[in-house]
Amino acid sequence: MYDIQSRWKLEGNILRYYGLRNQPNIFKNAVKLTKKQKTIIEKLPCDLTNSEIAVLKNLVGAQVVKFESKKAIPSSLDEARFCSTCIANDFMIPGIEFDAQGRCPICQSADKTKNLKSIVPIMNTFPTSKKSRFDVAVFYTGGKDSTYLLYYLSKVLKLRVLALTWEIPYMSECARKSIENAKQSLDSVEFISRKISNNDLKKIYNKLYSLSENTCACPALAYVLFYPELVINKIPYFVAGNEPAQMLGLYFNHMAPKMAYTFPNNKGLNFLLNIGRILTLHPPLKKGQFHTLVTMKQFAYGDGKIKNLAGYSNQLVDNVCEAIKEVPNILNPLKRAIRSSSWSGNIPAFVQVDFDEICGGVYEWRKIKDTIIRECGWVAPEELDKGLHTSCKIEKCKEHSQFARFYHMRSTMIPFSALEIAIASRSNNLSRTEALAELKASLGFSLDEIPECVIMREYIK
Image (cartoon, rainbow, N blue to C red; front, side, top):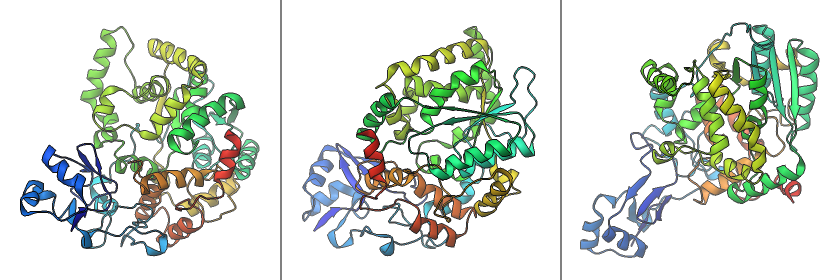
């Protein structure tokens, strides 16, 4: 008797894989079927005749296997197979494959991805602005990464920083305390916070929950709220505080092609882009400004058709954009700011600090925590081992919903935290032992609903 191999699913005339395949097939997750092949596969599980096997051709042995050869999918972390190098395993990423050495595709790709650092330009130093009273701006959540970025920009580089905080209803107490302590510790930083009304936020969250099964809209709504502020204050640089594992996770989730990581330094493409700007009477763009406009337009108007046709759409961002439409007036200031900044050239450049480089090679979570506790009064979450996403009380809900949707093949998006913790352990941002402790104690990879989901549902209802 034959059946479809585990993690392959028939969708129309496509067999789609929900997992992460070995090199060189890492992104070959869809097989188009002929009408005859589809008809046969729709009958599975069943016995196949020799003529039917001939019609399926090379699908047999890979996508179609004998029933006893179907791979078992773990139902808990205790049953999981782990990568021999990092913390990746086939429970938190069901369908992940391993090579003969026991390495996962993330570790198999180490050499190929070592230069994929950021999809926005990297800058580790910044000039003093003559047109603004601020040199840079950052989104500040009170979490580990944004606190370290704020420390680096204000205390190490001694820049004038505008810190922008979106007050979400789920902000953790440790994040609130960290923000208040930072206000006392960082004298060259000006802090601004904004809060969307509960009525509007509940409309957005309810729609988002129906699409994503969680209400995580960070940092999209922060962009919507604060971009007009950046334009008004003529901020020259908006600096992202994403750690390296988060940036590389976009590649393994098939949300950013390799070209996206090299585009900032591609002089030819940037030259052609600016020719188009000049011909339409717009000022040419400086490094990072293109990324700003693309990001803001995505939230204001949705993803471009080219990106979707290329297969690199971001399901998470798409759902947030759809949810924001529930309160359409919230986008009006953003759209005005996009138009005015595009015509004037007064566009804050979207850039990224290379955390690995400024830390001497490796952004070690344990050392970083010690630094920001000492220099900024940062308050760690109750789960002392936690290093991923430390500012939100419902972060586990997002992990759980992304995991459950992927595990049950309702979404092709691999849970973000699953990729990030695996990449971080591969890159020695934390040890394998530390990563396993965080995975077991602090992350939301569970087939059963986790208690934090009650907090989320209570707010939206």
